[in-house]
Each structure stands twice: as C-alpha cells, then as structure tokens.
Length: 372
Length: 142
Ligand code: SF4
Ligand code: SF4
Ligand code: FES
Image (tube, rainbow over the protein chains, first blue to last red):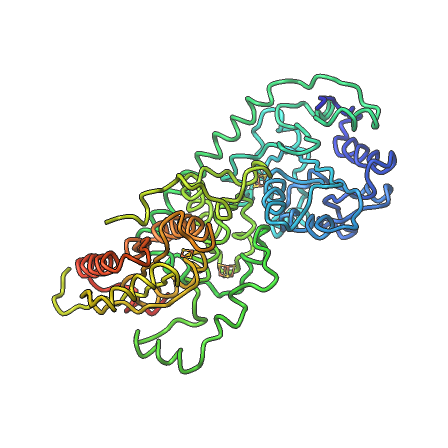
C-alpha cells in the first residue's frame, strides 16, 4: 500500500474526489464506478457509472444513507461474466460487503473497493428536508473531519445507527480515503496499492498524521452513546420481553428488506411454512384465549436475530426503514454484541474469518450436551 | 412456584440414529420415565431448525429437548458439532430477548443409553416442575 494525497484546488474537495474517480475510468483501471450519485432532482442514489462525464454528479461525501450500498454490489459482482468495477462505499457498507462475500452473495474478484471515512449520515427524509430548506451542511462536515467534531445541522440529528457507530473509519478496502484528521482544503489523503498508484501517476506523499487519534476520539464518543442505548434496550428486553419491544410491529418486513445481510430470495416468513390452517389459528386462539395476528411476529424477529445477528455490522438502516419507529438496530446491535463476543467473531472484519454458524471446533464447549 | 398437579409438556427433537433409538431402547427395556415428552424424529441434530424450537416455546411448550449423538458419533460426521453452536447461539438469543433459555435443553444420548434418556427426561421434568408452566402459554400477544 502507498500513501498519497490528491491535490485540492480552491477548496473544491468534492471536485478533487470526482477527478480521482474519473481517472479510474479514463485510465481504464475499471470499466465502471459504482458510486453515490446526485440525481437531476437532487436526491442521492447509488448508480453504476460507465461514462466519466457523468461522474460530475458523483458525491462520495453526501451525508445521507437510505440503503446500504453493499446490497447493490452483489448484483454487479456475484457471478461471471462481470466487469471490472470500482465501488465507493462507507465503512459500514464495506463491512456488510465482507459478510455478503462470505454468504456468497457478492464477490471481490474484479472489484476495487474504495472506502471513505465517514462523519455520520442523515436519514433520507432529513436530507430532503434540509435540501428544501437552506441546504445540507456537507462542506461543514468535511471541514470538521480534521478535528473529528462533525455535528449535524442544527435542528437535525444523524441516523441512530451513526450515533452509535464506533467504526466510522475506512479500513479493509483497496483504496481508503483517510479524511479523519485531515485539512481537506490542502488535499485528500489516501492509501492505495502501489500498482494502482503507478497507473494513476500518483507519487507517495505523507498525509497530515494524527488520523488515528481523531478516529479514536470519534469512536470513544460513539461508544458512549452506544452503551447508553444498549443498557436502555437491554433493560426493556428484560422487562417487557422481545414481544413487548416489538408490540407495535406491523409486519411490513421493511427491516428485513433493507438489511444488507438478509438475502434469502424467499424469506421463511413468506413461505408456506407459516401458512397455517384456518382451524389451527382457531385452536391457538381457544388455547390462549386470543392470538395475535399476523401470527408469528415474535418468531419473525427472533428468527431474524438468529439468522443475522452474528453478521450485524451496525449500519442501522433497519431502524430508519421502520414505519413504527421501532428500535430494530438497537436490539440487533445489543444482542449482537453478546453473541459476537460468545463466538469471538467480528462481522465485517475479514473474509478469512469463517461465519460462526457454518464452522465448529471439536474441542469447544465439550461439556455442553453431556450434563448428567 | 411448584404446582403439584402441573405436568410439563416437552417437545423433543431427536436424531434418528442415536437419541431416538436410545428412547426406543428405554421403552423396549421397560425403563420407567415420565410420559411428558412429545417426540419428533429427525435424521440428525444438525437438521433441527432453531425456528421450530422457538415456535414450540412461544406457543407454550414448557420445555424443548434437542437430542443427538455424542460428539464424534454423528452419522453425518459434523451435524452435532454444528447443532451445538446453533443451540448455544439460540439459547443466548432467547436469554437476551427476555425469555427463559433454561427451558431449552441440548443432550447427547447414544443408541445404547436407554437409561440416560430416561434420566434426562426425568431431570428435565423435575426442573420444569420447579419452574412452573411456561408463561408464554397464556400470552396471546406474541
Ligand atoms: S453507520 Fe457508521 S459508517 Fe455507516 S453511515 Fe453511519 S457513521 Fe458512517
Ligand atoms: S420495519 Fe418495523 S414494523 Fe416493519 S416488520 Fe420490521 S420491526 Fe416490524
Ligand atoms: S446423526 Fe445423530 S447427531 Fe447427527
């Protein structure tokens, strides 16, 4: 890996980043760039861009997150034939991608991952409201990367997932945009493989230094916010049980649909397994006195925990998508913390760490099942 | 809460090759054990889908027993090692979700251990009697 700095002119950080992405196409390093793009109406959506001129609409710094873009890397990478693609991702999107690769829903071959240090993002609704009313404070957020004191625009908050995100720094990617600690008007520090740097004509240059300290400062504050949320949600789970926490769930399945890791083409809960006979519902109602409908809501959430929680990388898009404003991400992250510790598994860390539930060791938990 | 008349209902998912055969042996050897188990036979403890364990628990089973071959003896080599991780994960989730993970038991019982099967059921019935009925049995809003 080589460290370098992309020059920024007239404080145009976004222009410099766009220029870098264009180079990837113009120098034929990749055939297309998957990046967040500003639509003509000003919304932001991922798009696969083959025409370098269109990258004038790319915005790798747009502080908004509706979907986790790892979801759209799968379709353009999973199978051959495929093109050579560069994907611009947030740290939590990269972590989700790592899990998807292990679940065989995406592939890293022919893919150049570009991950950008992240100050935090807004919900789509907040981002649109800001655009309509005074603008998004993207430039302020970029300027604040140096101190690590990026604050949401007054009257707004970052997404709940971001407020408790303790890993907002780029790592594990081919190319990392290392914004934390940097005075971006002086240039964008990045790390990239030597051969890519050579093709792009970039010479080694030292960044400003101090990134690790700034990342740690941000992470420490986030951990604190996270731990407060975790103890609150654990308390609720202990008192009300999971059925109580999800009492107002309307079973729209949005949390599942937006989850980047949940990938089954036909979810168990949309399959005939949970189409019970009419007489069966009556039987349950008579036995319990009443029976909540749609049926199996608590099992839906418990099963999703069971399927996903070890791989939950904490992007929080499930909570943003919930029309009932349920704390889905807080539940998943809090339960995930315990489960991940139990199996010594850090989701998103490396494609070389096997998924905990498809592997085993003969010499572990040897007393379990043998109790006399 | 111990209610003398309370007879716990246990749903048991047993692997065909070991624990189910062990249960059968207990029967043919006329070893006495409490009649509280409803046995579902599967090919392997590795084919127990945790969702069905949850379904039994949430619909009011007082206990769920998962039985398989001792480690090293699985007829499909590693089904029980995977089941061990799965059930450990499931129990942790059940606990974190505010439910009672002690109602879920995983036990290895071989085809020749008729007495062990009877002992496991006897112990489990005793433990569940101590606990009392699964509160979810009366809980409609789950
Ligand atoms: S969860 Fe973390 S990495 Fe993802 S958008 Fe929020 S701050 Fe950025
Ligand atoms: S998004 Fe919310 S309401 Fe919809 S299924 Fe998930 S928890 Fe329930
Ligand atoms: S065959 Fe008995 S546990 Fe696999």
